Image 1 (cartoon, rainbow over the protein chains, first blue to last red):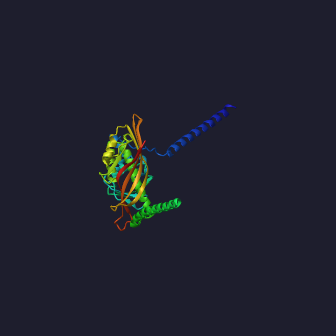
Image 2 (spheres, rainbow over the protein chains, first blue to last red; image 1 turned 90 degrees about the vertical axis):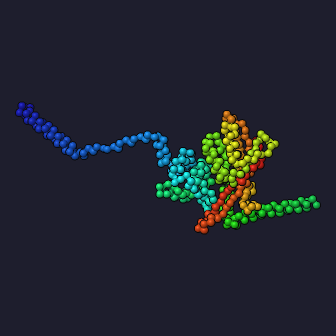
Image 3 (cartoon, helix red, strand yellow; image 1 turned 135 degrees about the horizontal axis):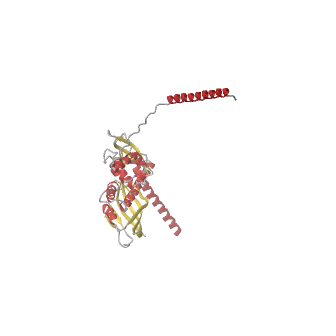
Length: 152
Length: 206
């Protein structure tokens, strides 16, 4: 190859390299422009821990054990749960109407909800199941009237 | 002659037993007729009575249990007396194989419960089983409906995890049942209350 041909080849190579570099630059600019704007994620601030651990446990128990669940979960019929269940009633003296086996036999005497919860605790293995026949709430969403069916 | 006499006696006893059976059936059906109770309702009523005795057995066991908090034991006494017994005047008899020749001791129901708390054992197990009617519900002289329920009780007392005392007692409880139609004409409910009068000791053995 003579010197003239060598110069032409070098010129051609530099043109090709320039084109490649230019193309790469244009591609880089284009891609960057098409990227969506970065959105800064907003995470909620961590909640402050409850200062009173007892209160926290109590609230957890309250939400975990509703009266309807309590009736059917015999293993939870203990004193702390009974106390939290009582809070769901308008008073400790709400009378409980007791029917037998889904029929029309009704006990004349009506124990208060406090007495009834104790009775459930003592007789926890006697019942095959207990169903709520009727439940009424007051304006504060507290239970003010209840009747149950006891099955042995 | 001897054979004839035996046949006459056999016929007489057969007649007598039929009369007694008929009398009991009449008394039962009397209650059913008055309240228009079906056979299944009557069975339900008697089943509820038996269940009351089983409930009482659980209360006795709970009160005697050393793991029961004293406050809860007292509440259990109050509940049992209020809802299972006629009242504070009801009597429960107790016996012991340690004093075989002495008659059972009669205690007011609350005294009986309180004595359970002060027995000198680390652990007490009381189980009531084989609870059944021995005399079905019938109208008594006062116009109430009453019956006799038999209960078998197993008592075990432990000290330092060693069984110190155990006995099996057959008890009999007299029960009064008040049953009536709901005065509300729109209701078909049958209202009933079961009250245990007294519980006596029939037999005690090791």
